[in-house]
Length: 210
Image (cartoon, rainbow, N blue to C red; front, side, top):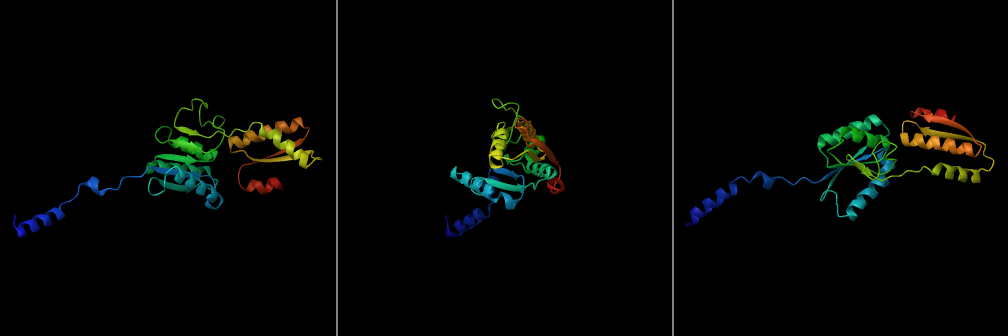
């Protein structure tokens, strides 16, 4: 082959378009990470989560992608974020907080796996039973049915003259509501008078203390 012909052939080869598969960057598995409060409150937990992934070899940006979103206390906001995750086709959702997990389950009951960090999975309706959860939701069970009595025992040791007890609880959260009812029942066994203050919105906290 003549030198001129070789240069012409090489130039043509360089100009040939590459297959689309050779140009596209492989999509990383994506985690939709939904947090129940604000970034300032959750920073340490988020850092611990990312650190745990790295220890398992899941390095952000190289092995997996993370989409962080903050609910900031609103169940409506949780639903909006989950719909966004479903639209973006994240590979799975990690969440903490009853409202956030229920919103995720309602938005995607089959396709995207949901992992919750804590809670009462049966009492809140996350799963059918612990042995066979069913569906696409799994996580850690943090049921504390016997804690109410222990807390009151400790409180009576700290305040021996305790006679009247106020309990403030977010009644919009089924786990918190259950804990409040258990605390009320336990207080009755100690002969304590209970004042239950139901918190439904932020404004109720100040009026509850008042």
